[in-house]
Structure formats: C-alpha cells, structure tokens
Amino acid sequence: MASFLQVENISKSYGDKTLFRNISFNINEGDKIALIAPNGTGKSSLLKILAGVDSSDRGGEIKFMKDIKVAFLDQIIDFNPQNTLFDEVYSRLGSTYNVIRSYEQAIASGDEKRIERAMAAMDAADGWSVEQRIKQVLTSMKLTRLDQPMGELSGGEAKRAAIALMLLQQADFLVMDEPTNHLDIDVIEYLESYLQKSRCTLLMVTHDRYFLDNVCNTIFELDRGELFTYRGNYAEFLEKREERYTNMQANIDKARNLLRRELEWIRATPQARTGKARYRVNAFYDLKDRASVSLARKDLTIDVATSRLGGKIIDCYDLSLSFGERVMLDGFSYKFSRYERVGIVGKNGVGKSTFLNLMTGNLLADSGRIERGETLRIGYYRQSGINFKPGQTVLEIVQDIAETVEAADGHSVSATTFLNRFLFPNESLNKRVEILSGGEQRRLYLLTVLMRNPNFLILDEPTNDLDILTLNVLEEYLQSFKGCLLIVSHDRYFLDKTVDHLFIFREGGRVKDFVGQYSEYREYIREQEAEEARQAKIAAEKAQKSKPQAVTTPSRRKLSYKEQRELEQLEQEIPQLEQERKSLEESLSSGTLTHEELTAAAARIGELIDMIGEKEMRWLELSEI
Image (cartoon, rainbow, N blue to C red):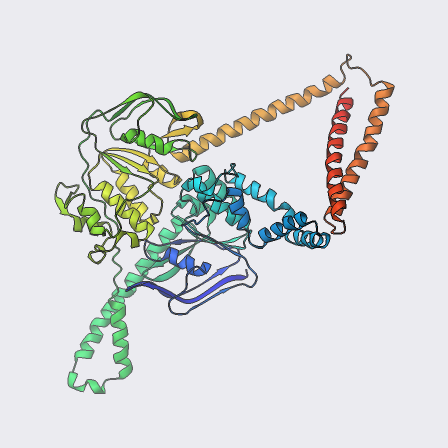
C-alpha cells in the first residue's frame, strides 16, 4: 500500500513537561488507526500537529503524499452562531462554495460571458450536486432543521454538524479527536458503518471500545513519550501490551544484573580509573540509564466509602413534564430498589438529562410526585462538567468541599492523598483548573462527586473525555459500588459492563423498561426489524400472487377503441418528451446558451416535468383497465 504519511522526530512539550520526544511513524493508505494514551499525555497535541493546527517543538518532518486531502475533526467546535446550519456547512466547503456563490452572482448580473464562465466552473467543481449532497449528509446525521441558527444547536447537534462537514469534504485522510463524544448511539452506529465501508485512511482518538474494534485495524499507544504500534483489535492490544511490558521488565532485570557486575569493575582500583577502557566506562553509564527505568504504572485508584442506603430510595408516581408542546415525560411511575443499576438510552433531545434533573430535584414535574428516602445521598455527575472560578487551583477545588475524605475502609485520608490517588501528583495541585486538559478536568470533576460518599450515583455521559485506562478503573469501581446507579451514556461497552437494565426514552415522553444489557437490547431491535421485514415480504408476495387473479377476473372490462388509441399515443409521446427534457438539461450545462435562452430552457423543463407526470399517470390508469 502507498505511504500516506511519514512522520520523523517530532516532539512536544509544555513548560517542563515533555509529552513526546523524537517520535517517528508511518501510516499507509487504508490504515485505520486508534491512538490510545492516558489523559494529558499528548494525544490531542499529536493530532493537531499532524493536522497543521500546531507544530513540533524541535523541528521534525511531516510528509503527506502529494495531492491527498486531509480533514480534521477537533474536540472544540468553532462555528459562527449567527449562520444557519445549512449556510454554515455550505460556507466551509472552500473552493466549491466560492464557485457556487460566483455562479449565483453571475446569474444576478445578467452578463452572458460571466454566466458562461461561471457555468463552466460549476461543471468542473460538480457544483450542481453540492446542495443535494449537503442535505443528504445532514439528514443522515439526523439534522433536519437546516434553517436553525448554529447558536441554538445543542452540543450533540453541533458535533453532528462538524462530522457532516468532515464527511462532505470527501477527504482521503481523516484525523478525528473523540468523534463519538456527545453523539447518541444511533448516530455512532451510522458513523461506525460509514467508516467501516469507507476506503479512507483514518487516525483517531477514541475511548469507545466497540467503535474502536469495529472500525480500526491498528492501535498506536503513546507511552512515556514513545509511540508503539499494535496490529489487531482492543483485546489483542491489551494482550500484546502486557507482553511488551513483560519483555521490557525482563530486559531491565537483565540490565540491573549486568550493572551490579559493572559497578564492581568501575569501583575497583579507582586510582587506576584513567587506565580503564573509555568505551567500557561509557557503556556503564548507558547501562545505568537502562537499569534505572521504572515500569511502575500510575493507575487511578477509586477508594471511597459509600453512605448507608435505606430501604426507600426514590419512588416516582405518575410523573409528567412538558416544555411548551413538547412532552418530555408522560405518566412515569417507578420505585428504585437497593443496588439497582439502570442505564438510560435514547436520541439526543428526547429528555434523558431532563429526567436526571427531575430525580435530583433540580427540576419539578408538572404533575405527579417524587418521594425520596431519608438516607438518600445523591452524587450527580453532569454532562456540562466541573464548575470553577477563574484562577482556582486543583487543591482549592477539593478543599472547598472537604479537607478529608472517608475511604472505603472507614479511615479518613487528606484531600492531597485523595488527589494523588486520582493521578494528581503534588506538583500539579497548585495548577489552575483552566489549564488542565479536558480529560484531567473530567477526572477532577469525578473526584469531587465521589468524595461526598454518595449512595445513589447519577452519571450523565461520564465517558466523555476520559481515557480508556481511566474508564477501565471506573467500570471496576461501579461494578462493586454499594448503592444505586443511574447512567446516561452513548458508550455501549461502558453500559454493557455497568448496568443490569435500561430505560429506553422515546418521543412523546414514553419510557420502556428493558431487562438486559445494551447489546441484548440492540439484538432484540434487530430481530424485531428482521421480523417486520419478513412480514412485509410475505404481505408483498401475497399481493403479487393475488394480482393475476384480479387481471383475469371476468368482471374486468376491455379498453374501448378510443382508449386503446390513447394508450398507444401515450407510449409514443412519453419517450419523446423524456428525450426533449434530456436534451434541454444537456444544453443548460453546455455553456453556449444566452441568458434569455437559459431562462426559457429552465421554464420549458418545468413544463415537461409536469406533462410527463400527467401522461404517465394516465398511462397507468389505462394499463390497469
């Protein structure tokens, strides 16, 4: 396969923190690669350097194959809030947008030569089909209100618009930073299917392990500033990564044994050191560096107590809520049980976050009532993320809540120790929160929720911006959590590992309770769809079988002489009209017509379309007699 990208010796640092140094790699045509690393270690920085948004610190070289088109999907989406959805996407299609605007201006001017030039440019850029293509892609991303101002879009809708724009660029190489964040599961599965079938080359950061497995064939791991390559899926990556660590540890142990012997040699007769072989002295210091490498992994540790949970949790009685004419919840009744684990799924905007706000008391229902147990202590992790004051530090955020935290064994630990367990070392405690990466802010927010020792955890899209390694630890904690869980998530893998049943939110405020994991629910839906398709096929076959009987029925009358002549005439006229329309359409794009001729041709095509429609309808009526 052709080499699409060659990267040699690129580096990135922020202050005294080195993210990566002198890394090199190659990406071939057709590769679909996922980049994995802990938050704050340089994943997004690497993607931005490749996309040309940022640059390497110490030179290095980035070579793309000549003439390939690169599209970049950033986590931060910058749109003009005043533009409509259609205009915003339309305006970002670069030269195509300029060609279409030039054509519209030429038509308005009435200058025949200018119109001819503009039409030729439209032909070259395939501008005639751009509008239709934009509408098709936006619709496939579940964006149908094309006149909606960008400033009114939700986070999920803005993300879908950004993905639609990326797909419309028809790039050869896609660079994507967390493409599944803020998307509902239906759109994730659509994007997953698109990327599976696409011949594009892809490099992306993602925490969605099902998405990763279904799309990617290679994994890059950024570890301690170095890049490692693994072929295969996520499970194979974990296996090969463990094997790599085992081999590295064996080499380190071997180097330490050699170091002991070399140390004895280097210390022997120190007065004669000047006579020792210089190459061996240099080799000693190289060996010392290799032997001093530590593979100790700094993993997140979640060790917090859970407050005692009584028998009564949250009881809901006939809850209803509407915003204007939009019904968000309609007659919902449910009693939560101890240690219950509920996942919430549904399309964006259907009312999932609204439901969470009802459960926490941040929102009141229009009717019905909610009763909460006396021992209930809710921990609410909002999708919007952590709130902080400008200039506030990591340690100040935590100390504002408490100076100490109760651990699972009943002992109290200091806020500093608790931060260390959440991978915030002492040197980072005085960092301002605003300079933390998105993933680090999310990790800090999770810490502030858990340190209050909740017994009912409500998590709204907890996987956004968290790296895979942190998610693994969070999943293990939630599996052993001694309380209730209520989780909204688009991460199918996360839901499968953490919940026992699902609330399926649908339009009109309807909620269906499905017992089982998300994968089981999707299989249930596929079986339903397959059964509906089978029944439709059976019905169509029955209709087809009954059709000849209707044709041969004695009650059917024959065409009159006049009707027979009309049918024959229609069979001659319809192809002639079709041919005339085709000829006019070809002349429209020929560039030879004057402005008046263009106007007349367009009007005639409209007449022909109406005439053909009427004649085809009459032909069908006569054919069925």
